[in-house]
Image (tube, rainbow, N blue to C red; front, side):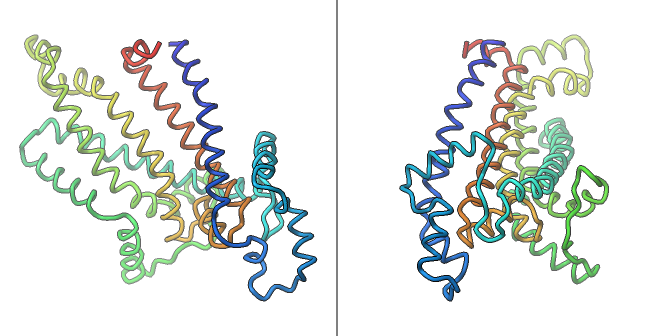
Length: 318
C-alpha cells in the first residue's frame, strides 16, 4: 500500500504541471486586449498611460516570459492582481472559496443520502414496483438539465412563496445553519441528476454482486435476504460506487459555476464567469487554477480510497 501511495503522489506533480501549463496558454489565446477591456472603448487613458500600465502588469513581455513569471508566482502562492479592483487574486479567491465549498459539499451530501438508500432498495426489490418507480424517477432526473430546473424553481418560488435570491451569502464555516438554508435550494437542484445516476449505479452494483458465489454461500447458510444485502453485497459493491461518487463530486465543481451564475451566488464559479467576461486574466487564471486543484486532489483521494477498499488495485500497480 505504501508503494502505491508514493507512486500516486509522484504522478500527481507532473499532472499538475501539465494542467497548469495548459491552463495558462489556453487563457492567453482568448481574443481581446485586457487593458482596453478593463477601461472600455472610451478609455480616459492615453496611449502612453496604457503602455505604462501594460509594462507594470507585465503584459509587454513575451508569452513564455509571462508563463515562467506566473509559474514562479504560483509556486510562491501569489496569483497576481485584478485589472479591475486592484486587489490581489488571492484575496478574492479566499473570500469566495467558503461559499463554493459549502455549495458543493451540501450538494454531494444530499446526493449521497438520497441515492445510496434508493439504489439499495431498487436492487433489493429487483423488477418489483419499488424498483420500477425509482428507475422512472432516475431516468426523469437524468434527462432534465439542472440549469432548466433551477430557472423553473426560481419562477415557482417567486410565484408561490415570494422567494427572493440572497444578495449576501453567509460563510458556511462561521454560521453553518444559516448558510445551509441559503444554499439548500441550489445544492438540492445540483444533486438531482447525480442522484438519478447514482441510484442506477448502486442498483447495478448490487445486482452484479448478488450473482457472485460468496452471496450464494451466504444464502446457503440460512441468512435472510436483508442481512445478505447489508453485510455482504453492499460492502463489496463499494469500489465502483466510490469511484462514481468521486467523479460526480468533481463534476459538481463544474456544475457550481453554472448554478452560482443562475442564483447569483458569490462563489469561485461566478468569479470565473465575471473574469472571463471582462478578460481579467490573472483573476481568471487564479480562480480556474483553484478549481483544477480541487479536482486533482479529489481524484487522488478517490484512487487511494479505491486501493484501500480493493487490494487488487494496488497489487496490480505495484
